[in-house]
Length: 417
Ligand SMILES: [Zn+2]
Image 1 (tube, rainbow, N blue to C red):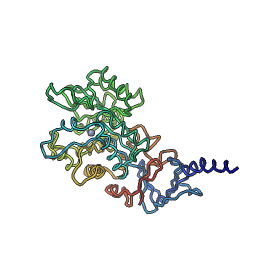
Image 2 (image 1 turned 60 degrees about the horizontal axis):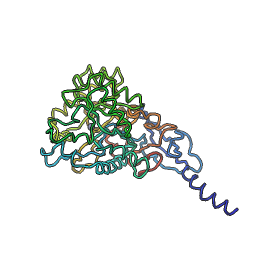
Image 3 (image 1 turned 30 degrees about the vertical axis):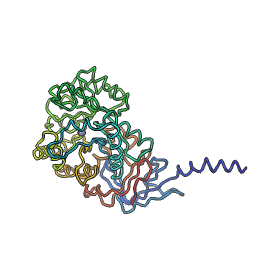
Image 4 (image 1 turned 45 degrees about the horizontal axis):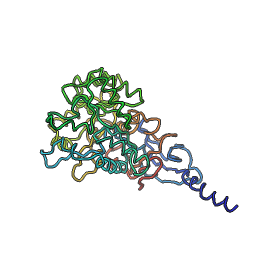
């Protein structure tokens, strides 16, 4: 009898405590899909999932009181490079290429874990990482977080970036070899693209990232279709880095799921995207970030900032589907990666995007683009409990998102007021 009781205590108690209900009292519950706010709702979480919204507090539940807060689903960033940091000092002297040959995949993975933790603490519970992570470093970060060795957001990794010969470089001396293959796959024909997609999926990529317009040999419609068909066959989406011109038209016609950047898209292209349901992940850099980036790549920050806001305003007016993507690749002095991600909110304001739409671009829209709407992205029964809270209303001012003081990831409290 005593042995039986002993076994009961050992084996059953941990199960009972792991499965305890958590009831969150949400003073103001935001539904980003509609922009509606409902008052004094109870969200019940059980074993990492949301089991009810708007009911009563179950007896025996652990109560988390967020009565004075605005509660919403965790934020998503559809365009991160969490393992990457381009050197910005000394100004004007940094070589874009130097970074790629100086840092090992191991270092990148450690940075990815570090960045992931910062983003999660700030309220980003899911990120889509779109490359530049060495030899599948983002897959390693994803696995470490999934195994719960580290706290971090859900990571949708892209593995290596697929592009025409040369990755995102130009004019490398032939005797340097193809060093870019450390994190790019050269693919110049539909067959090579199919093979590159296979390789990435084999090594753990959950999204396919192409660069379409870095060289004179941008991808044809047929090329894009080959990659898209192959990826879709395996249930994966395709994100394509492209700025504009014929390369962008080919990407849209080829059926890519999202255009990354698209800074030079014209109205006809934006209309085509709307018709086809192609997402724009605009990575709408604020001016100060462009200045830092301009030290490494040839852009004029001021005129670029103007054109980015103009493109964002036009895309919004036309009604293109959009998802938030920050594309932070440098560390500005005194700022964290999450500070820098929130800096992009300024661009949306300047382009006249409503606060409600910004919240949608950071939650339900990326969940749709990433193909995870049935798992995450909303506060609804059956979805993962990725929940954040803010002591100020982000629908009144999106800058309040910087004040996130409660984060729950898969039902686990990461921080609370
Ligand atoms: Zn990027």
